[in-house]
Image: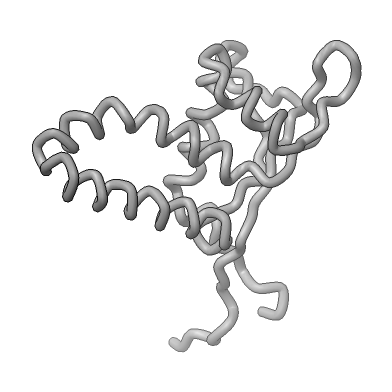
Length: 138
């Protein structure tokens, strides 16, 4: 048995359909393109978070940062979801399709009423295998 180098590769983004959490996980028709671990946006956000945590530990002390970090985790999930949402289609706002621009992404995902969307994006971001595909050249 052998393995062909390049037959499996990491991809930078994937598109998911946001599921209706009430109607037995049926699709909503809203598709979101998410930057995965190999995308520069995702990597930059992870580095930024690590640097902030290191600086806080130096300035505030480890125990205080650990206590505070529990409170900050929910906000960090929202910020990561915002940063890693690179496109969407099919999201309507009563006046037509809502454009996917940084302002709208923040407005939608930072809204506590939309935490169920952040949960779905976070679930995908935490599953690195979703960003691995068979190569088209395989």
